[in-house]
Image 1: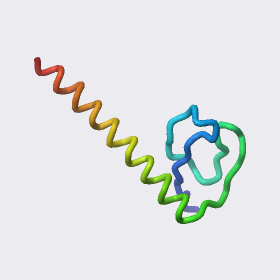
Image 2: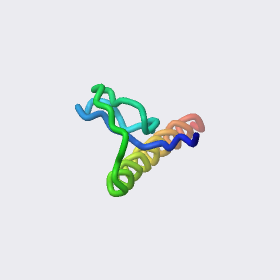
Image 3: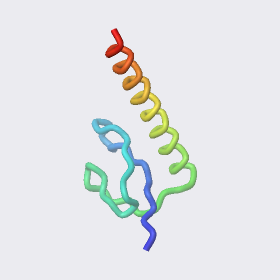
Length: 67
């Protein structure tokens, strides 16, 4: 069985977005099995933004090691 991943941000806003299995419960224990394409796109775009920030932080850290 193929497991599809969705990106989920905690409904209480305290946890960063992260990929979860579609059959997982959120941090608030509210199961969500089906998401719309619009929700999936929005979540993936938010996840991309988080990864871009992570990469920027990594590059900053690496440049600090050169000095």
